[in-house]
Amino acid sequence: MYNADSETVAGSDPKELETIKNNFLIKKLGLPDSSELDEKITEVMERIGTSERKKYRAVVYYMLVKKFDKESVYGM
Image (tube, rainbow, N blue to C red; front, side, top):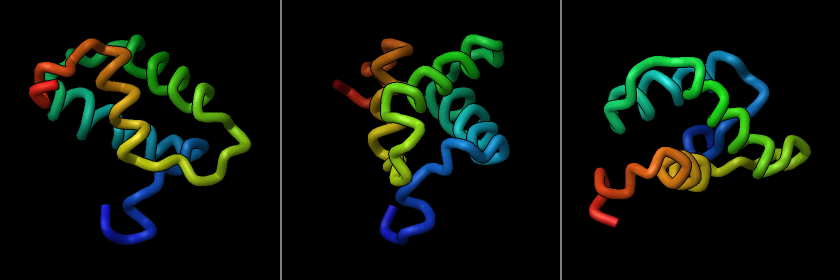
């Protein structure tokens, strides 16, 4: 999160979105792989705005945690 490349998410890059799904939603949050994961990622990207070039990774992850009601993973 301390360099420019990793602090933002490329919302239009399918490889980046797949990485979020596999490394964050499945591995970190322990969610089962399903089409719902892709839907929620799309919802978050749309909520931030497709025209917003800088989609900060921390914000995207926070919004996904809230969408899946997984605050307990981080002691929220």
